[in-house]
Image 1 (tube, rainbow, N blue to C red):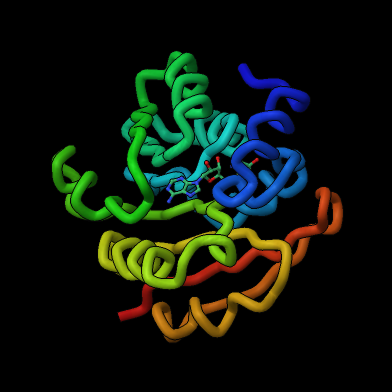
Image 2: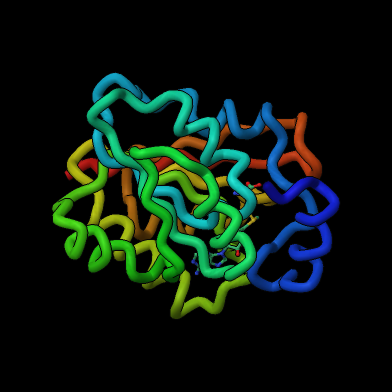
Length: 187
Ligand SMILES: C[S@@+](CC[C@H](N)C(=O)[O-])C[C@H]1O[C@@H](n2cnc3c(N)ncnc32)[C@H](O)[C@@H]1O
């Protein structure tokens, strides 16, 4: 699996799409997932898994009926993720924009939770809006979209899509410290 140094090399070469030079800390990974009830969640989606730091944490928490579906556009990270041997993991070399159609192709009508590390502020507005709207559409009622960013400035844009049920959290033990947005689909 890609170690920290290899992550740095790949991330810096693709800084626009990676949005960082280091993988998430275990503290951030833990905080991203702490409000998810894994005993009930059957379909979990991860957007921008990178070298799999959060992916592995999610896999360790899945119940026996659950599936984790990952969307990663970087070919190197995609190939590394494919090496994780886990029967409940599906890795797609597709953009997060396609989340709704790809879930439908797999025969899943809705996802229970979406965990995203996408560098939303680096992504052109039209694409990030499409990602957010397709994520919202693919979530079941009361499902959550959990996203980290290094600034709190994305709150307003997420609120335009999720309207209610939004909270902001913070993890200092990450380089750099990160804000965690939790958005619930309340209909
Ligand atoms: C900040 S890195 C996160 C890596 C890892 N999840 C972590 O937290 O350490 C962001 C990842 O999002 C991926 N990415 C960027 N845009 C994407 C898109 N439109 N669809 C899917 N993945 C994307 C990048 O290739 C990169 O692996």
